[in-house]
Length: 237
Image (tube, rainbow, N blue to C red):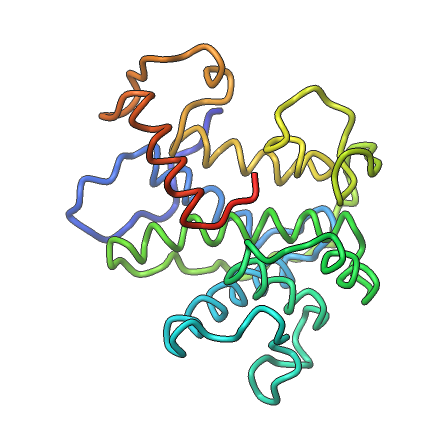
């Protein structure tokens, strides 16, 4: 997937690849644009809450246990912010305790007023923010600044989707589950592809490429690191 040159770069002498910086720049720019179900200010707030959740866990020695909702603790989150408290609680749980998510928990978030497709978009942005920020944190670099949120309503332009094999609605496509997961909100799948192309292998080459000439690691080495990272992140998939 072609990406324009990034409008921001990491301020470091470390040899960060241009395509990686471009991918992070493009995705972070999208955080402050209107989404499919969330307005730009809400999408930017999703990223801020990801950062707040992660920093609280670091500063508070593992932070809140998964069964405690941050919105239930006075002063921890802004009750008058641009996001409903159900969304904030979901962001913190997904960020800090992804291995504890259950279908009943997901349904509790929907029952509190978050639309299922808005939840899909939220998961996409949470995953992107964690991915980009963890890269910066690991290299002790400043996290990418958020742009000023753009005006305009959410597009509501999604794919036809229904609950079939997953908790959330998904589009009727023949793709691996990891791609189906966000398929009801194509814009978030596109952001997934942007990051994956730079950090993993371009999607069109995933199935057939065993020798990777894109990066310094070969494909078996990439898969070993990916599997270990998924295990450490308690990835259900």
